[in-house]
Image 1 (cartoon, rainbow, N blue to C red):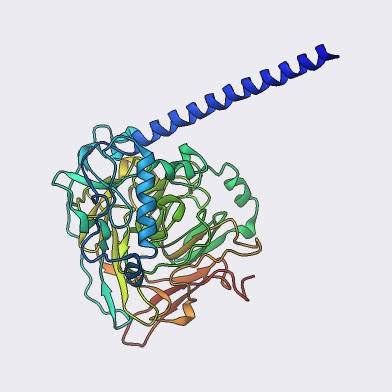
Image 2 (cartoon, rainbow, N blue to C red):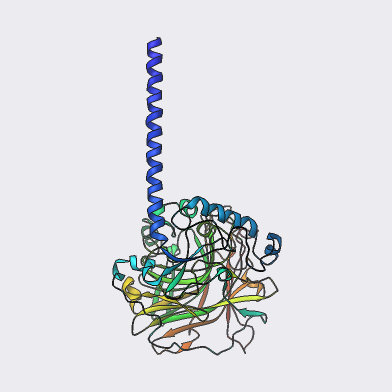
Length: 471
């Protein structure tokens, strides 16, 4: 009997030892994968923008004062950012933070992530389009206190030298929060997306305009409210997007205000996008941040946010994609907006992105297929990502826009004004045909509002998510 007990104990001990070895092996493998990914994402920096330990940017004040200025829990976020970088240890000298908790790496423009793309190995960067795109001088309805502004917090701590671009440093902690290291910066592959949507005719909208027919497939786990226009050959779109700081219920959710340009089959479209987003999981806080995104197959297996995957070529040394922006709008108070423009150079077939007066960079035609020549659909509006939308109860409380419905109108609801499209005539104009839509109108709404006959319409959109009408 004692011999059997001894053998069993030895067997259990052997299992524990083997299990421990297996766990350690898996841990080493994960650590190796994380280090490899961090090295790929965080290119060598010529300079890093950060603050010395214990110091604050001029005028930052105490955490309480910062909160009054709209920077919530600044002290806690800075300490957390310091701890994140302390444990990160991935190459640069660590031990300081910028006011918003970010480190900005100034990377050689020819060593940016774009050149990891196979199609861009021998790509020569162009710093400006080959043509001048038309400017707009018309008047749109907006809140009288609106101010066009785009100020990034990291600028208080320094600037990047000529020949470099600012790239927000990705931390080990942010990478480990991703569902998959390889799918960091995007929601991951949707192998069943096409099958699920094409077999369910009620799962998509059909829009027609002058013979142009486009199927728009709503994405799983997304809820959008938007204004849409269709055409044969759009080579540009723009709008002034109102900046807010909406609530996000869970770190696994996010909310955006943006512009989409799309082309290709509805169930596998190409899209390039720009705007602002609040994404706690990706950026470690709840501040609105500038972002871009693109996909070649309706986000099934390609595309990502900002420069996390190769493709977009950045030229600006002023604007850091993924960096926090300020100030933000206040209900019935000052309203702030950013002018976003996406235009294709018809000579070089590059989709150029501008935020305000700053040329950020471009999507080169080499990474695109359907959008090498044009877009056929443009959308303006908002998007909420959550697993608790479209019939899942309880609905998420993640807000879109300001958190107010479109019916709250200017001063309370989020808006996009001066909506413009550009075609091959190079004439900038308000779209001839537009339509507003919402996937969940009782949760998030869209309204094409015209203040008076003296003004053109302004898109209002947004909502609080879960409410009495959106259980």
